Image 1 (spheres, rainbow, N blue to C red):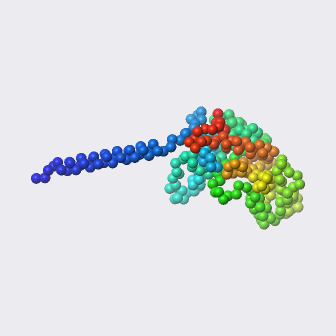
Image 2 (cartoon, rainbow, N blue to C red):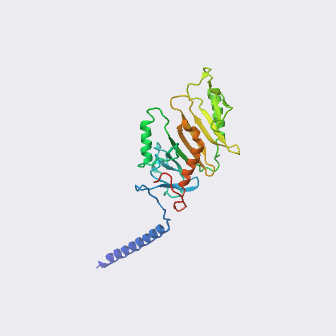
Image 3 (spheres, rainbow, N blue to C red):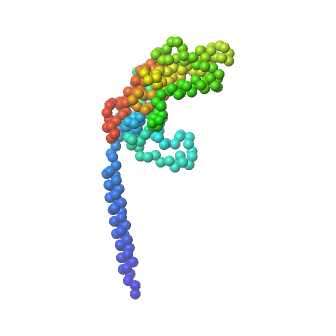
Length: 293
């Protein structure tokens, strides 16, 4: 006669083994959790957490209300990428070492302020949209994108960009750019075919083929500031790009040409804004963050 205790004995032993394995797993998990660094995460007065990551080789903590549309990290699929690879993509844990690809925000050219949602600057931004744009008055805000340069071989200047622009216009549009004798606000100034449309032999009537080019070089001959501006039309816009001297970062800001005269102060202010977001490796704040009340 078979003993009925043997099966129960086996089940009890199996249960004990599973419990021991579970304990080991829990202890291993607890140990791993203890080994994970505790990151400082900062909030604004509305409880919104900062966006964190690495920008230009520096850990940063960016106030959540400042970001206009996104903080994108290196490796993130594009917004319209519907591939299977994009659908399967899993972003690594966000830390102060995870490289940011780009961020965007709104910058006020008249005083260097950053627009922050639910703060006075957002009310100012919306009011300016309602009142200034319909009347054709200069809009004092510039849409700003900050690009992280992670390729150590990428030149941090616009020398090639200028050469390519001059070559393309000559090849495609069949005209040359000419450097003007007088600088504009300290910027070297190039006009397309000296301001004359070669197809009509009359002054240009559009900006499609030949926007004004303005640029500034450093002492080493590197073009660190590169600006393309409209010169005809009801609203004249400038796309102003520049590299920072101390960080591998590219900034692009688009604004009304009325504020071109502030180009140096704009670069200085935006550099200061980015510097205010730099934190220690563990996330401790170093300075008062721009855009956070």
